[in-house]
Image (tube, rainbow, N blue to C red; front, side, top):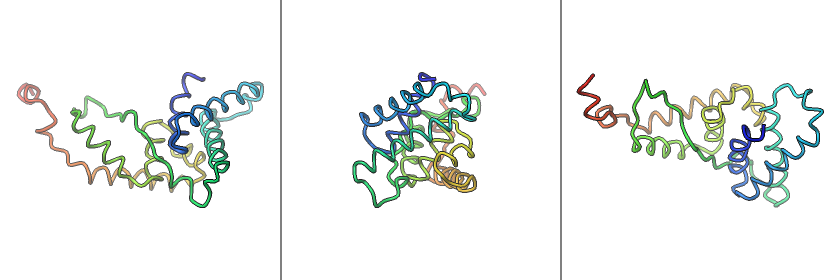
Length: 171
């Protein structure tokens, strides 16, 4: 469980509190509490959502202890994207195009960016993201649609620049 969930939970915590060390501590503390209450795990319906909610709550507690109140914590998120999945059979993307897409994602509003990251990178369902962030499923759907539209508008895809010459001639 630790090896499966640590990395995405760490990135999620870090996006909220912007501190690598504090994010590591928060995620480790969540896993320690899980271990201490391991006999109660069978009562949990969705472990992934439970872990994300636990990390979110611990990060929010950390922020409140630092006297960072007065703003909506979702507006302070800074999501980091380690990868974006595109089916290579459908689309060949160069490193330049990936950099351009990452730049487009980085320009998304904070709330939109974190929702996009949780859905597209972490593979969570809309319902799970809604539960984690205390939003409606419709809000999550709308934010993903807004993200995709903004990324699509920002990224100008030119097939001739992204497909190597040798590939085009052998098609």
